[in-house]
Amino acid sequence: MSIPSLPSYPMPDQPVNNRVNWSLERARTALLIHDMQDYFLGKFDTTQAPIPELLSTITRLRARCHTLGIPVFYTAQPPVQPAADRALLNDFWGPGLTDPAQQAGAGVVSPLTPGPQDTVLTKWRYSAFQRSDFRQQLENQGRDQLLITGVYAHIGCLSTALEAFMQDIQPFLVLDACADFSLDDHQMAVRHVSRCCGMSLTTAETLQSLA
Image 1: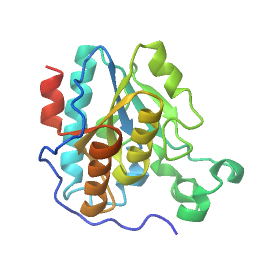
Image 2: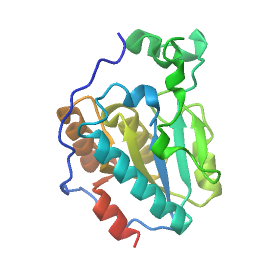
Image 3: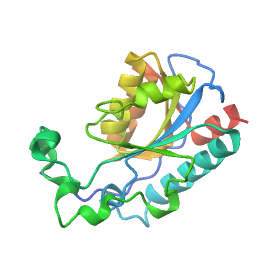
C-alpha cells in the first residue's frame, strides 16, 4: 500500500509539441518545488537517473528565479497528519510519511533547502491548491503563471497543473525538472499537460524564456 521502490530511468529532456503557445513572463510567474522531501526522493536510488538531473535542473531554476525576484513556493507534507486529515490517502498509500519510522524524511532534500525568501505550503492533498491559501498568495503577488517542478509528475504535479488551469493560472510543467514512478508515468503527465491544460517545457526552454 505504500509507495514502492522506484526504478531508475533516463530523464526526458526533449521539447514536446504543445497545444498552446503561451509566453512565459517573469513578472507573471512563480516557481513551485513540489514535494521534494527526503521521504519521496528516498524511493529512488538517488545516485541514478533521473534524480541527479532532477536536483540539478530545479537548483538552476530556483537560482534564476531568486535572481529575477520570481517568488518560489514549496509544498511539503507534514510528518503528523491525523487520520481524519489524511483520509482517503490512507486507502491508496497507507500511513506514508506519517509512519513514525518515516517521519525523519519530512525535510526538503538538502540541495534544495528553502531560503528565507521562499514560502513553504503545508501539503494535504495531491494538488498544492487544496486546503491552502496558495491561490490567494499568487493573486496577492500578481502571479498568474506557475512553473511546476518536483515529484511525482503524474500525481501531485499533474493535479496541481490541472487545478491551476481551472483557476485561470497558466501552468508550465518543467518536464526535465520532475520525476515519477516510471518513464511511462512521467511521459503521460507531460503529454496530458501539453494537450489539455498547459505547456510542458524543458529547463533550457524555461531559462531561455526567463533570460
